[in-house]
Length: 310
Image (cartoon, rainbow, N blue to C red):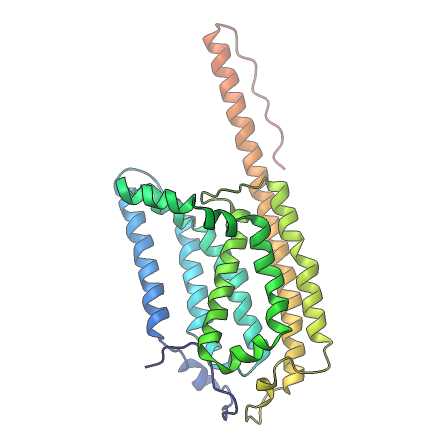
């Protein structure tokens, strides 16, 4: 039974990733499989209870959350995990899935809001205490989340920690956990659906995400232009297929740069759309309140003028 998520160990002979081998390389790691199933069942049960009580829950949030679970399964259980210690490009793709795909999708599912709506009594009070606890207030601060999400990549790839993570399964798994946790902390205030101590206006969310672009781009370019392999372990595997470790590392740098910028642009577009919808709702609420006050005062209501939708 495999309890760790690391790929082949240093110095191992690695077979070529044929189609048959890729189809059969899914690893039902018990810890990850049970965790993902438990999270899915808990979310769907909470949604069912909420709807049964007469409170609607948007179907798109459920779709986002389940898509996030699927992205986690793809990153941690699919053939990706069978080569994540062998090929730097695969490792980067896995990292992008965890931080830039799974994390924002899970945040868009608003699981904390759903849990608070179905929880009652002591359970709900405990959840609220945790959300307002000093530790969560500190690590949930946007600046702390941004530093953990962005700068820790430099600490990983340009230190002996990266090579250690390729040789030690426990360290490897902890790096996965850090990627996911840092991603969730980063996207939590950006999405802005779940309750948070630190709320950011939409313009701040745009700047928060855009500020990540130069750091990701510089890291990707630095890795692409590096004349040496970042981790000696990457050169220890016995394989006669695929690119050289250095060429593969350059591909990984390109993925980090290009995919990071693409996802950032999509995120900014999402924030702008959310901002436009929010402003439209605010204007509509103000107009409704004005009409209600004029009706109460017995004055004829002026026509409602709504600004054009951006």
